[in-house]
Length: 91
Length: 69
Image (cartoon, rainbow over the protein chains, first blue to last red):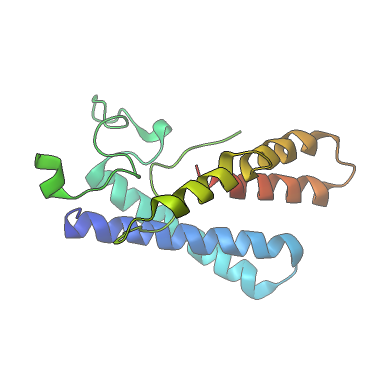
């Protein structure tokens, strides 16, 4: 299991990204819906902050955001489909 | 154009693996008549659509499939 704070920050990113994306899809067919527009704007704003918070602590989420520390954070570490089980990792 | 986010869409925690089911799902995704093939067609056919709404739909549905990648 990833450490708690990394897991929580990642969940925040996943949550706001999901909301924003779902609103965007809904708006494809209901472009005038004010509630959906507002919800999307709110989620997009929260997402931006959540991404910044995560990347600040745990490295880039997109290749374009990489390189800040002069390192290879983008390619390093686990990829999303690899389990974060620490016991497993030590084997 | 595309960007890739190094994250899953939502957390996944599989307790009981099922290889037979996995085989079926991956073949629905990438196999013959699979979603991936369809997505590539949608993303390629957007360019000749006469209406913006059609472009939007083909784009969004194509992208949705790539979320599985």
